[in-house]
Amino acid sequence: MVVGSGWGQVVEVIQRDLFDWFASIWIPLFVGVATVVVSIAALVASSRATSLAREVERQRDAAEKERAAEAQRRRLIDMSVEEARALHRYVIETLKPRWPGRGRLLSESSPPKSPLEQARDDARVMLEQSIVPGAQALLKVTERDLELRWEYLPESAEEEDEERAEAERKQLQNDRIARTFARIREWALDPEQSERQIVLALNLATRDPERYLASARREQDKTTEWRMTDYCPECGAVADVTRNPDRYTLPPFHGVCRKCGHEWNFTEGRS
Image (cartoon, rainbow, N blue to C red; front, side, top):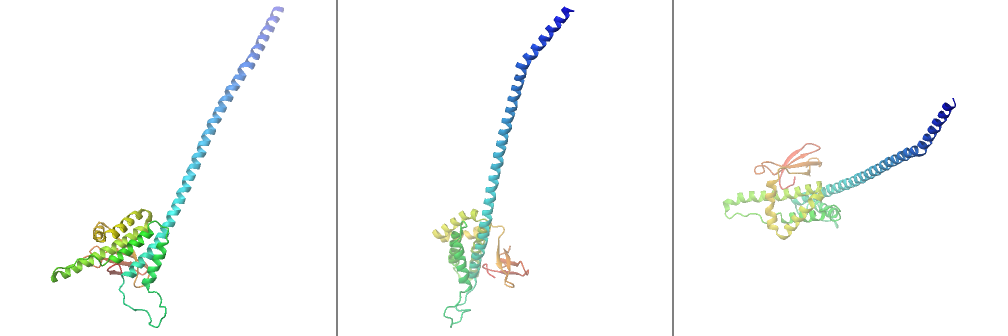
């Protein structure tokens, strides 16, 4: 009995020593490893969270810049459309036939401005002070078009060719004014994209007007669709204007009023 009791005490001591050894070495080791693993996981999660936050912030900044750019583009287009309407009205009034003194009283000391003078002043004020890209160049090249509309037209060498020459002159004038309207429309819809071509056209019209005018027909031959706006002669509302497909037998322009539906054909970009 004494031997058995002694062996039991030995076993108990060994177990207690093993537990103390395990508790003093392995448990702290396991706890340390777990702490390291948790710390690494926390660092990885924190790094990913930081990267995600940066990406979200970058996307937010990009979206904000895109919205600001789009808002700026819309503001430019709103301004360019309004200014294009004023310039279009100036061209229309310039192309209308004029009778000296019509609509004015001789007794008036300071007669009111004519529609042409008013349209010209409105267009110049708007485009000369405009912040829209290409506005000043567009005004200059449009006025250059109006100055040159009677220049470099073909003349007949013989009397029997006069009718053909007159038709050719008429067609050239139509092509020139159609190019003017098309340029105004393109600028109104996308001023930034159109600015370079407008500046090139202005340089050519200033440097070599004959070559510039000769290019009008080539440009119109390449145009598959031409559209601009005018004002209805019946009710005065805005009307859509397109080119007649058979421009040799019909007047070159066809108008359709958006309000009353009135349709009419006309020449030289005027109703």
